[in-house]
Image (cartoon, rainbow, N blue to C red; front, side):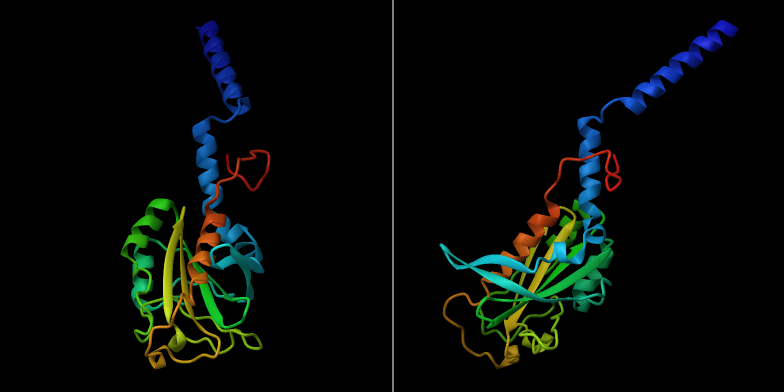
Length: 231
């Protein structure tokens, strides 16, 4: 009996030691990578989520830079969006809405970008499918429901209010839905814009949203020795 007990204990200890000291499996690394991505909204500095400058192409083959004018400190889900959107994202367990505002290189167009964080990609996808999509032709008198505009005093975005919202876009990456809302830096009310404008004056907005969504959702190779990772 005693020998059997010692043998069983020895096998158990050996199995435990092997489990604790073996390299993580591919499945475990994938789980760790997913967890790291889902924590970025609170683990990354705001300036990393919203870089100071983001490249966009107003026309094919020509690159310009959009410059960040400010980052909103409030991350509450209900504060960053209109009520209809707030109800949808809360239903899918929104964790935060992060917002920052950019102006184009010519400082004629202003874009507020909003990152909506969810617990996992499946909840983000369900919310994405229920949220209003991109705005149609311009000159329709504004967009609602949409992301709230975020003006910053003393910058080119100072006059950008909700009344000036003329365009919206939506994108998704991993557990994040990225919304944008755009207007003109002079703050003219969207209701005053009666005619469609030639070209695509707000073409930078979906590009900014896509760049941020891609950065937030790109998986890194897990480093299980780094305390930031949970392998």
